[in-house]
Amino acid sequence: MKLNPYLNFNGQCKEAFELYAKVLGGKIEGMMTWGDSPAAGHAPAEMHDKILHAYMVVGDQALMASDSPPENYEKPQGTYVAINLTDTQEGQRIFDALAENGTVQMPFEKTFWADGFGMLVDRFGTPWMVNCGPASS
Image (cartoon, rainbow, N blue to C red):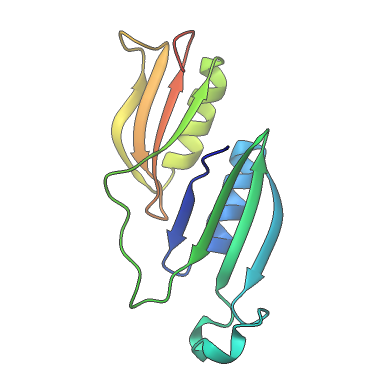
């Protein structure tokens, strides 16, 4: 069994996933628009160029997402996508890239449990935690 985050976006799924693939070294395995799906006839015209389902592999993990219809979109709250690494410089790079044009909630710095830890909400509204060090699991 694997647990995989599934993110919902308010029309920016494609842009967000392209950034995440670049920053995290992931590979987008699939990305289907509402208009290219069998559900196209049931989707409003303004959703046809939005993402129905996206799937990205990062190492042996997966991240999935879609664009929600505007009336169903809710801003994420109460959850974070957590990234755990042992390389603090790589953690700082990832943190800085995700934080660009976003909101830093806790700067990336040494803590009592990690060589580097930080929390942010990226420009797409996705909350992230980056945790680095020997005790990162």
